[in-house]
Image (tube, rainbow, N blue to C red; front, side, top):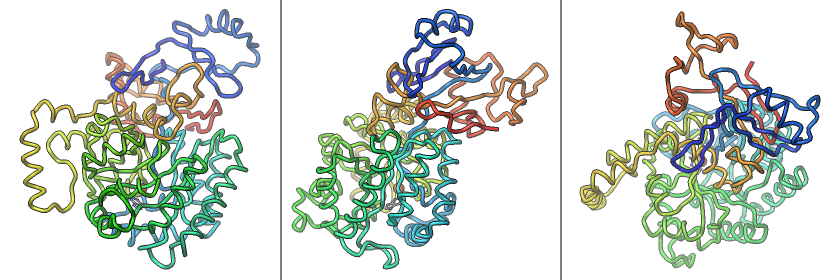
Length: 485
Ligand code: GUN
Ligand code: FE
């Protein structure tokens, strides 16, 4: 059984099917109603494939193939801090927990240890493609790219740029030196993977408060000149939004107004290849601007809840034509799992439906205005905020592929796409109430299936209760990159 998204609201189930992947990792045929006998007798001869050279992977009962997950926003350098955030909010969290850890990864041995583990861990959770922030350190950022390539994980790897409002021990000394360091990393990654088969560089201004306007503008120019993707954070936290308005008056930047999105636009950072993490507190004109520029949003629900940033309105973003994917935002987010992000996306959408949008400290006027707004919203409109199982799994796969610029290449099982996939195993409970087939693998039954559940119900059980124990094997571009032992 192969399960993948057909559209935002629809999963397709291909039962008793065969997917044929060639040596270069490309799907060349998807055959329905094709058991092993038929595959050998008719499919292989039709493709002209020699049976002796073909490797057959056959799912057991209770197992299915699903596209690999795409994590559209995470900080590889913050992995040692997962779960460590106390009751901090964004700006104090950065100073207390994050900057000291990131700065310490200039030690190459420490960086190797952390990055090797992040890649192994995310692959084990089915993440076949990740948009990584590294640190300001060029050598260890390049090492992250090399390690992704060696492990076979698809990745966007960004050297972090920040030349203000951060500690003196962890800051670029000038816009020029930040751009030069970015170029050095781009060059390295291009040499390591000249055709971008797996790994590509991404221009990474950390977020507006930590970048001078000169730096943002130079990175915007670099994005235009290289046509490379851009990743940054936007409108995550109310104090951050206020800080941006205070630091960057439109009179100094030429921006059309004092909004976060207008600032990035004035710097040339809003491109069709730009990934904007969070987007919790955007205004209507900002959303319209992002839609016009073709930017994508990485929704990071675990992080937004953990750091009390707010509840991003994904339906609202989608309704405005903005491409969305999911991000774990480790370690603002506490888990390396995109499945975890997907189920929190479901829950956060319930909170939005209950009227909990945005967050942080609001002025009285704003609160009153919002109350009025939510009262005028019909029950039906509120209900619409809820994301379904199908929708969050779309965001985790095909939506994410769009966000990272790989639409049509990964995220589904269409002919011509590359085989980035995971084999998921659920526990088929036997007649005695035991774990049946899956117990052979030594796994406790974290997702129990009794056999009478429909396939959509099985997928829902996986979404809400699944974890890396269910991720039996993972492939990227046809190569086996993880096997659960
Ligand atoms: N804004 C600026 N830097 C960061 C970061 O590392 N994580 C999150 N969540 N937001 C940020
Ligand atoms: Fe982040």
